[in-house]
Amino acid sequence: MIPTWRARLALPVCALSLLAGPARSDEPKPAPPPAETAGPSNEELARRIEVLARELEEKKLGDTADPAPPAGKTGQWGLGPAASKVYSKSSGLSIGGYGESLYQNFDATREDGAPSGKTNEWDYLRAVVYLGWKFDRTFVLNTEIEYEHASTGEGGEVSVEFATLDALLLRQLNLRAGLVLVPVGLVNEMHEPTTYLGARRPDTESRILPSTWRANGIGAFGEAGPIAYKLYLTESLDATGFSAANGIRGGRQSGAKAAADNLALAGRVDLVSVPGLLLGASFFTGDSAKDLTAGGTAFGARTTTFDLHADWRFHGLWLRGVWARVDVDDTAQLNRALGLAGNASIGERQVGWYLSAGYEVLSLLSPGSTMALTPFVRYERTDTQKDVPDGWGRDGANDRKAWTVGVDFKPIPQLAVKADWQDYSNAAGTGVPQWNVALAYLF
Image (cartoon, rainbow, N blue to C red; front, side, top):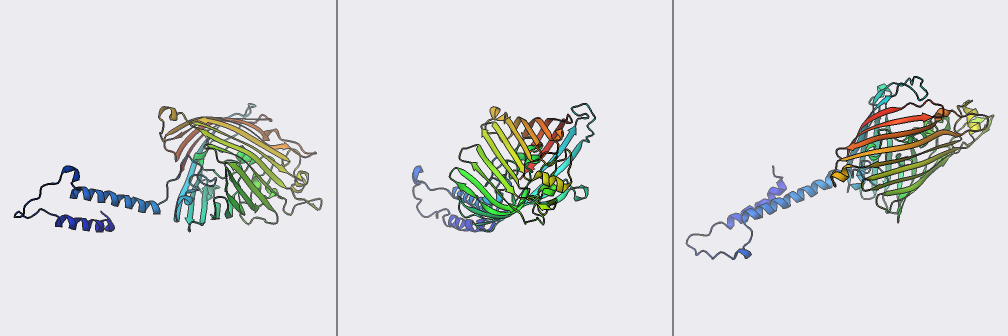
């Protein structure tokens, strides 16, 4: 049905058409003008008005509908394609999201030949909804609500992954407050599963840099020349959650009634001026001991992370790498306060790194196609007990190596089917290889 406003536009044209009907038979008929000077016919006028009306309608819808996510790109301000949709709107509501389902098949034996004891698992890891509201050109609300493991009745949970209010002042200086993503590594801010290779996130960005890591905070972000930056004051970590195997991961407070006696500083800088290249570094530092004491003496347990990261895409080639390190001060006092002995020590130094390479082969066969097939390989090392204090030992199972070989298939940029094989080994000889298959989407 033609919209009312389009019908109103057509009425004057119809009237003009009737008034310009056939001339009376008793009047002399003027000679037809030369072909090159004849005006458009009524049918041509109607066609042009219809085209103009359609273009106006599409423009009107374009102002109110969500823009399609820039799939395959970095989005804006370092966030993923779906997470940054709200910044592309002129005003109003933005809806996006992503999800992933993961099947893991474990080998029956460990690398030392003993039974692995692992059970194969199929998990709907997460379903996420982004809700954003752009109040005007300056103020933007952006939120991510995450549903994990399909059901809160089966060990899953519902969490606010981030919720920020931004004041977009200048390209060089903007303000942000709320529950922020700590700006470390490559995955923590851009964790949408279609934006990295592999069915599972790299161990370095899970065991060493504990993605997804969020915290209450306030700070600034922007771009100055070739450099993008973020600098936040946030809640710190809680050292009572640190462990030998999982490093600082259990110390994330995630904005939930977070202890705020100790605050932390987090920031990053990235080179963003070279097309296809992201090159940068990040840090986080803050005391994490809260009210812990050892022998009646308080200590700080300052925890500092530092990483170097790079991501380069050139035609079909995709190279990516991260090196990350965590230092925990006062580790001996922390071990005593937590009652840890033997090889259960918190790592005084924790280190991880990986390199990955993939090539999108369909770009060779059909340039410009939206379909993509990317075989890839990744090698990484992680050790959550690289150094421990005197008097405690290291558990070789925490010194891990992993080869990941797989393929990433995208029928369209917003959908991905991933399959890979991971060969795990460690200094204790207890590594277990596994196969993974994942289905991922974003919108």
